[in-house]
Amino acid sequence: MVLASDTSAPKLSEHFVDTAPAGSVIVIDVPHQAHNAVWGGLMSAGAIARSAVGVVISGRCRDLAEHRALGFPVFARSHSTLGQQPFTRPSAINLPLVIAPPNITSDYTFPSVTVEPGDIIIGDEDGVVCVPKAMEAEVAEEAEFKRSVDAQCMVDIQAGKGIRATFAKYRK
Image (cartoon, rainbow, N blue to C red; front, side):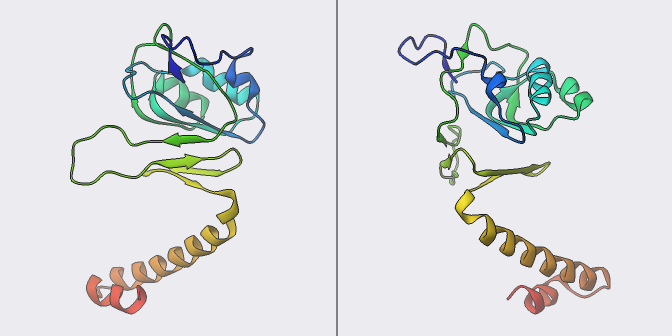
């Protein structure tokens, strides 16, 4: 997405949702100064019709109840009642995106993340991660190992063993 005032950015010949391949996660980067939503219930309905499996927005969405009713996963930094027009517009599709953290004043900020077409996007109620396609096997193996370690920790902790001792035993 670009600000609607950006007349130098390319314009799409078709709606970006109509171009979503089956099985894809749509990833949208929005200029940080935009306070409007760039995704709503109609976009989710269109994405479902094209067999997309979710959307991740570095920006805002709206129509939260509609997404839930449709069962379509929508991950966004925030939400807004303002629609996309006349504030922002899509400009390009299927290109690498550099998702920068919002301008937050704190002692620590997350680094930017580059999302390439074909990367694996995984999200749940805790957040979203991007796994580069080339690292799929390595990340899956590491995640499974950590999941089994945490399962062992849970058994010991629920049995009353101390967290410190349990972590020392399993999280080496």
